[in-house]
Image (cartoon, rainbow, N blue to C red; front, side, top):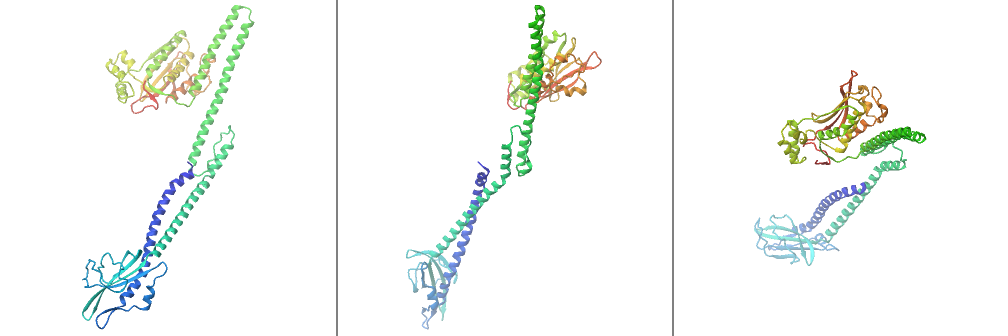
Length: 528
């Protein structure tokens, strides 16, 4: 539904209701004024007839109607007039409310309708509607007491006229009201339609400007040429355009970096293959093939990291479930234990211990229906310091994607094994710090200078200062880990690691996530 139609739909019913109420009030007021004017004109001949009643010398009542009274009582086209002068015998006392039998007609039409209720006040007119000879009439009744030489006589003067002209006047007034209301409605609709069209002209220009843009044009929209009410919408569109532009820039940079990173190993593999083909010595040819296999392994690792980085950089959200960060970190340590032994490194694992706070948190999660009850029962039944309690109790419950968190920790641990020298010590530990669950991957390798640590998360940026085997790394591990951590509402920070043999410190990469509680649940959460 368009804005014009919506406004007209919202405004017209209210306008119509107001016009109906206003027209009804005007019609009633005009009808009252019209009836008052006609009643005043009807009362005039009644007063004339009332004043024309006199006593004779013999004490009889006579009606001496003047000529002008006869003129005003004449019937005209559409306005028929009737009258009657009746003597009430015997006279009724003041305040009587009983209609007496019909009295003696002194003048006029004897069958003219009498008032439905008797006038309570002498001389005050009473108006009422009736029907005379199948003609709707308006009647005025005036009761008067006459006194002459001790005699008390009482007369009732009735004057009636047809109401045709009254009805015609009211009908004409009604038609005028309807025509006025129709004109008002049409004017309101036209003004709303025209006003909306005029107000939307800046939006029409904005639409035409957007349609005329090239697909590569990512400049912000001009918010100065639109109404102030639309400025927030334009600003939101500009914000979306800016985000989209950054995404495109990141994608373009990623493709450029990825193509550059893949071009070098492919060229090396091609050179090694050509060397192996030209080498007549089978032993040397096998050395070349082994070099190709090694390079293919590094290239496969690079390709997997590129795919992981592309997946981690996507803006779509992934379903989250309730996890124990202890379990995820332990699985990663077990996965990389053979690789660390192959390099002669000491890979250690320190798990966070259950506390009173973690037990209460697990009970709250169970009460909220987020965690299955049998798991919590097993934890409560197990001894506090037993292995069963450590394995089953969710000491570090978090909401996240198990695959993504596993990939993030794998990159952190792979980096530590890759850059730490043989004989180095690497420790993976978990801890509950405030309302956060943390996993620390700490080593006593060469480390990274504090001033250079912010660069460690840049893609394809290999920090060469004091680090071993830098030429074989891709510079993607920390970028992938941080991207996955942020997709799960966490982050990664770099801290000082363990003291090394050079007198310095190694590097500690800490992944933290908000602790899962019954009050704060993740959207789209599924129970683990």
